[in-house]
Image (cartoon, rainbow, N blue to C red; front, side, top):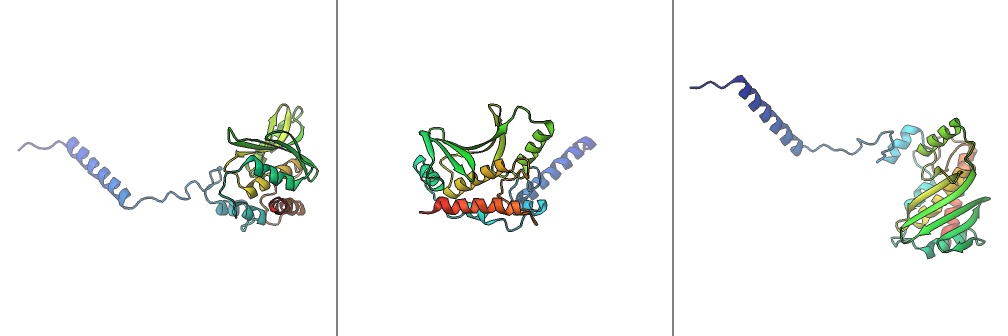
Length: 224
């Protein structure tokens, strides 16, 4: 009888072990939930991340109301106009899909486009021409953390606070909260760099005021 070479025996055993491991994986599937719940921006579990970063574990009233009671109907230009007019009945509408109005002294621009299903909220802050390296670094850090849904951005040599989102899937409360966050991010530039959407544990009075502004806007914008 011909003896089997050690190489064949090793290859056979390796194949059997591999097949066994694959079978075990199918018998006991690995739960991947939470693998990306870390601090690199891929956040599936917001409450656990908030706890890690020192945010208020219960969130805020404004944050809770954003997802509550949203209409299932797609957002339309008419609904945008109704909500914006409730926030400021002196709103300017120089052309279709363009609104200019005031919230707490800040000039807000909303641009919507049904064809491309996009919406932007803009608040101008200052010229971007003389921004220093440290200021740009702070802007980048804020965009990662305290800006939340709004963002600092530069266009046409202007530093903006802005919010961008698909139009049709935008809810009424979400839209109003986004306006508040964009305004907060603009007026807090140089002092907090916060959209006010989340409160820190033991946060200062300015955090509370920014959050309350969003809550007040939601009540005003949804009022029939």
